[in-house]
Length: 328
Ligand SMILES: Nc1ncnc2c1ncn2[C@@H]1O[C@H](COP(=O)(O)OP(=O)(O)OP(=O)(O)O)[C@@H](O)[C@H]1O
Ligand SMILES: [Mg+2]
Image (cartoon, rainbow, N blue to C red; front, side):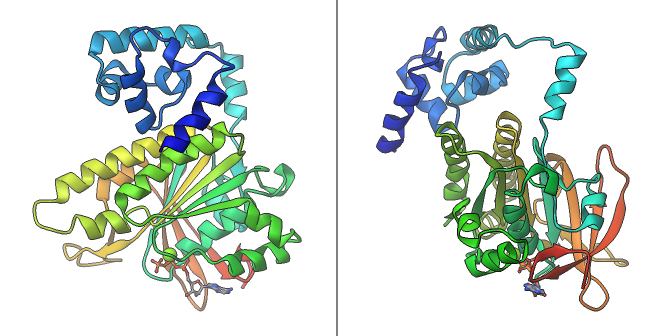
């Protein structure tokens, strides 16, 4: 913690910082930093109520601070061209399968969005996460984002040797590929939440992060809030966490990929009796939601669910040594 503050002060000296805003003193700064807000952008994108909650300032003071941050950043209306240019900034990361990319709109997972994969054991959720962590590093013309990946591993299923093999088969240098994946093991849900703040710090330190994988999003939450009467608490915490993920996705133009388990849904008598953990909270927060299951032979079936701008659709893909692929 102490370490973190020291490095922050240094990098913020050159530019206008949140301490230049009216009403934002050391106590508020400390709270803001604890919530993962380090710069004007972090403030400018908040509403007065949200800022008041995280900073401890009153709502009127919060409104003033937000206004000042927006003025300093010249945020406001932008013309259509500017807006289009901002849109163009969005990067895409190929899954490795043309079919799967197609399901997601053509080019794979995108930045400024959360993509969620849910499915049963061994359905391929982790394999997709590992593949994306490699593919993020590819040049733009090969479906990558020329960036690094953060892998938040809650289950201890990150496998360096798997990454190495994928890299080799894609003609990349396995050591470099591994170096460009920053892995952190999250030991409980609080730790998992803290690690998201850390991503902001890495980016401030100059790391070109384009992908954050959280594998699994829900396992810790599910284990820790298993008692009767704890569901509301769990959902609230999960909701806040997802908002933080969306915030870093937007603010830093990166893609968030999360995995989620399923539970048997006894209320469903026909069809596939599985429901994603976290239910609507996760569903609403995810920009793209994909259900993955095993198909015939060794194939996998991915189904896009409730996308705001794409049709519900299915595709078939495979898991191979190279990662996610179209071939068996
Ligand atoms: N090199 C490989 N070649 C072919 N298939 C592989 C390879 N590596 C893994 N798989 C397949 O991927 C499956 C594991 O998938 P994965 O770990 O992604 O599941 P998951 O959806 O994350 O499950 P869980 O919910 O248990 O975390 C294996 O059972 C195997 O079928
Ligand atoms: Mg897994």
